[in-house]
Length: 329
Figure: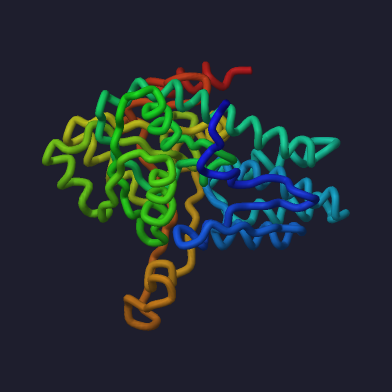
């Protein structure tokens, strides 16, 4: 008999509403928030109760399901949802799938189940990239909490552990809102995978000391040429990995690929509120009114990416060709 997953579904359709793990309250409390209207769902997305590109894809579809069951204007609902977070292309993908479905609820539930299945395939493809006893560095959260379930970057690590490869993980704290410290550490603790939390600025020191065997991160959008938008700080890790000769892997479903974006220069980068940087949990760490630039994502050039792990397999350079083949049809 299969043991229950130690991490419950991140997002699900329950009794006519969208039920989500409230990631704002982790790691202190595992709690759920219900969105019964499109307005409530948009608030959950904007305030990061739900986040992560694959999870946002499911949220987009479930938002259109809410519009359908509540009688909201579908065009207005779609525009409202799409306006919440501009960088994750999966959000638009999910909205489009839900908008086109005759039964948006059934489509949203299908996409949620399909996301978990795709992530498991992705993990299985990526697990052999993790050396036996490999020390993996990851950034932000690309685990079950960033998806409907199982995870992308953490899905690769999780699959490696399930295959007996005994990985351990360096967890970047991921300033400014600490998704690594709050979410990735919480997931790995639940999964029983050995992990150590480190300050973001420690990554270079770990690499120079020979303590990192590979880097595995997720993605919020991948351009047609293989440029990758992910949580800000990812680009720096890719540069450091290249300097130290360490493989740098990106794990993401094909729905994260945006064929309408020729390069990373065409990916919109979300700017978020200043207080995320100027304070921690409501406590000011900068002078009042001090100017803040808060870019939520950066773009890693394709030439710094060793491989892209997808549910269709491991894509290698040149990415224009491998992405084109994987997404054809």
